[in-house]
Structure formats: structure tokens, C-alpha cells
Amino acid sequence: MIHLLPLKNRILGKLDFEIKSPLHIGTGEKEVRNKTLRIGDKVAIISSSLKGSIRSLAGLIARKMTFANLPPIDFDLKKNGIKLDKNIDEADKKRFLEWFAAQTEAPGELLSLGFKDELKEIFNEVDPEKIKKEWGKIPEKEEHWKELKEMGECYATLLHPLYRLFGSISIAAKVRFIDTIVELELTEKTGVAIDRESGKASEHRLYFLEAVKPNQRFSTWFIADNLIPHEEDSKLFANVLNTIKTLGLSLGARKSCGMGQLELLDGNFWIVELDKDSDGTKLANPFKEKSKNFDEFVNWLGL
Image (cartoon, rainbow, N blue to C red):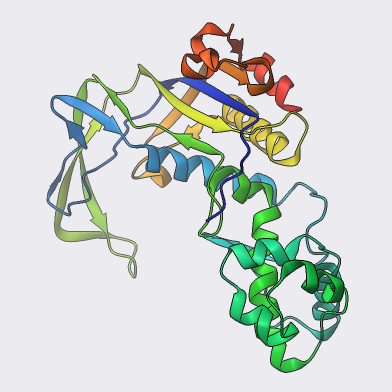
């Protein structure tokens, strides 16, 4: 796995939310009474749940944005990386190979990701500098298509802003959310399971859902490394934050029923630039920097 080093900046961000409808983040157990996840007597809003909702929104926004240096064909944004359509035609295959052949930094990256055997099979070589000399002549033999396709998907994943922000099996995330442990008042909702075939209420399928009451507030935190102003991943993150500020965020269970609606009230962001922090004191304590508010931060990112 590649981490996006060397470290150029680090951002500590705080997002302030108000809960607009009952919020349920459960324990994962399937019971008649589904309990809210807690640590001690406090409610736990786990980072994976928050990241999942924000990443899903980012994926929708990314489909509407144009990014440089990505394959000139349509691709699927799967959970763990870009996947090309299995039924890709010969014209798209050729365009993909031409794009891949132009990526002169790919051999070194692919070797670091474990594609040694595949590269050796195609080029009879594992030295990235020697492979570079032949890289623009990537063979189009059918027996090599599977290997090239897999390597190309992985390399495109490394370049795509969505995965640079939130990570994949081949790249570490730039943005990491932190579990939120907070005192919140709970309530209980009663519901009946719906039969998918008939669309009617199922008999003997009453359940109880413990949830956080609406009209309460909490703050959640994230840490981001190497969000460089005006780069594509920074612009995507700015668009995501701005969309959440405008439309809100859905979190937890029963979102389709209107539960888990959050309103983003504001945020504070502390940015430490490493070239201005020679002794590391600000990196150790980002609060030494003056914070930016929400609008200042998204403008700094390059929205």
C-alpha cells in the first residue's frame, strides 16, 4: 500500500452537525430491539459509518466532474478501485492501452504494488528504468490483456481523486475520520417489517429501533494529509463539503425512511504547512495555527 508521502501539509478539521431526524447507528446485531452503539453511557458515531456516507456522496459528485490524466473511456467506481467493463470493445481497449502507454511513471508504481510477475512476463524485465524504455510499446497481444487491464485499473485508481481522498486496497486515504463519542439523548421507534413481494406489512415482524433524538448537536473530527489547494482531489473534497453544507448528510440506518438527516452548521479547520513548521511544533499541536471557518476552508481548497 502506498501512502501519499512526503508529508506537505496536515489539516485537522471539525464539522458541527445538528441531528434533524432520529439517528440510529446500531451494534450490528439483528434483534427485535436494535440498540444504538454505545461506549459506556455515551453514543458512538463510528468513523466508518461517517466515512461511508461521505464517500458515497463523493462518488456521485465525482461522476459529474472531469479529471485530467484518467483513462479516456467510461469506468466503474467500485468500492476498492476502478474496474473497466468486462465487455469493453476493441476501440476502447485500444484507447485504454494508448493512455496506459503514456504513463511513464507507471512501472515503478506497479512494481511497488506487487505486479513484478506480470511485468516480467510482458517485458522479461523487472528494473523500472529498463521497462520505461519499452513502456510506450506496450504489446497488445490478447494473452497480455488480462494483466494489462488489471495493472491499468490499479494505476488509474492511484490517480483518481476519489480514491486519493478515501483510499482503496492499493492506496492509503488522505482523509481519515475519527470516532465520535458523545452524550446524546435517546428515544425508541417502533416499526413493522415490509414484505418485499407484496409491499405490505409482514405479520409478526414488529421491531424496536433505539435512536438518537433529533434537535441535538455534535461535532466530529477528521485528519487530512496533503490536500494541496486547487489539485483535483482537493476540489472534489471542497465540492463534497459544500454539498453537505447545502443539502445535509444522511447517516446510519433507515435513511430511505428519512432517518439520520444531519444539517452541517459550520466547521473549523487548522492547517499546518510543513515548510513553515521547521521545528515541528505546529504539527505536534495544530491548534497553534489560527483556524479557518467553513467558507474560508473550501475557498482555500479551490472550490
